[in-house]
Length: 371
View 1: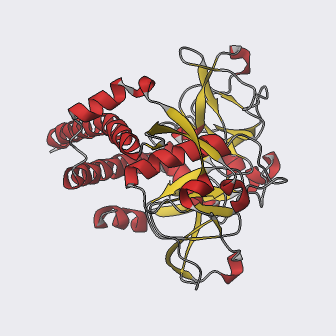
View 2: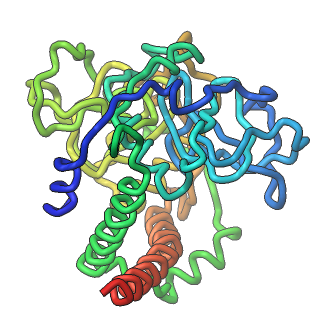
View 3: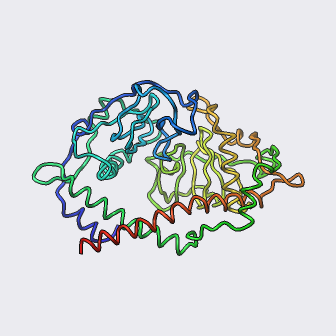
């Protein structure tokens, strides 16, 4: 954040509010089970769960509109503290609370400010250690800008708009410097996408491919010393990174995959430490983009709902895991995996680059008209 925006935050007056003063905290209208719902490709309404990605959206489901929760609300995972602004009506499971605003001024233009303050309040939350019901949520305190004793919605909207402009400019610069602004597919990448369905696949055992997985070691929260090494635990928030430490722990190499106690796999392109709820698969020798492909295959095989608080996923489970991979001459086809990931990356980046370019042009127009 640039100096001028920091200065604005320091100069504004702040007030403390209970969530119950700002929102009605509601429960679902009908419970939808993530393991039983049928997602639809077309139509339906968003189905919001406790995941930390895609704004909490697992997909769309086609159910009676009588069970829709209101749009222009915040969805809150009661035992994960994942929270997102939901612009349109949506369905949920039973672990999502719906925060319906009591102020008509609340909306898309200032919701991210509310969320930033709320996430700060819940920053000490640890996965599985707490569960927030309606009454406890109402009592949580957040800080908001005030003017003459009232919530300063104008300040929040102005601040978010300027922050967005700053972030878009940074994104555009990063894409250019890293070369990611080139989203044109090569002929090899086009062929990889075209021939995807004709690939040959085979099952491979993780231990036979990469040797035994390693289990992390427990490091209690009170024993963690602040530092720069990411420390990975179980959970989806912040990709499972619960702290940055300087303790003398085993450091795992980048370009590896972690699998947490629930069977959720994540690719790590940095060195890190891990607790005993995490298994590390040693994919260091595999090209980076092929490793990303591997992580997706591992996640599909491990994250099946079989593992939970009562039945944890451990390193021995990783060693026994069989995953499906493209194969060539009886061996995993890492070249095809890497090319496919490269192609998918460009397809995703294309939309981001176009969005950034359009946003920058719009910001320039607004700035010019204001000047």
